[in-house]
Image (cartoon, rainbow over the protein chains, first blue to last red):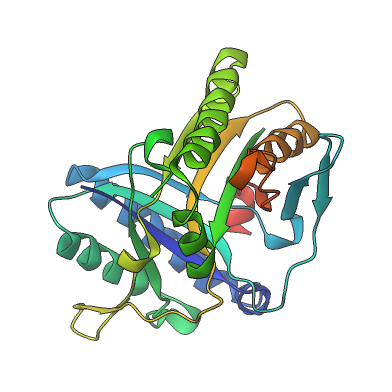
Length: 131
Length: 130
């Protein structure tokens, strides 16, 4: 079963993150690298991506003439996707255990960040997009 | 340049989708499939995924012992990721144009859903490190 583990944050979460010391950032990045390697070594890794900062995010709708209409205005409470992992595991419980490890990634001062990780099952493409 | 096009919706949005007549849902999916095929033909397609329904979503945190604490309680306004496309395009404008086409996919009665598609770039290594 494939699951996606998503890290999200509001703009104010990003502002906090931008204030972390270099040491804290390096510790966090080192954890993320070791975590990905562990997922690869254990054979559950499918893919991972980190997204650029929310300041560059745009919402796009279709205009009447078929031209895209872009807008970069989001509510303060908007949760931006920061990054994700896709894993292929035997059970939801295994996905939750892995998500808990990601949640424990070191944050400011080296303490576990305790960030909530959203866990969702992934389907197989267009045919299933209809839920 | 790679971009991710994110389609999201609240639980209410998903419930409303489930009330669409089957032929409207089929027409909607047909447009999305056509867009997927066109992106494959133009060499811009990287990947696409659809996610399972929001009622199965869980939030997970780690306990002190490292054990997962799961919780399925979300605010009503929570925007759930429904699915995404990753495209590799020459310009940002091209990513917006593709997102606009997805937004224009037919909804109930064949009218465009006009749903907003969030377009995001990927972090580069330097950004992640700095």
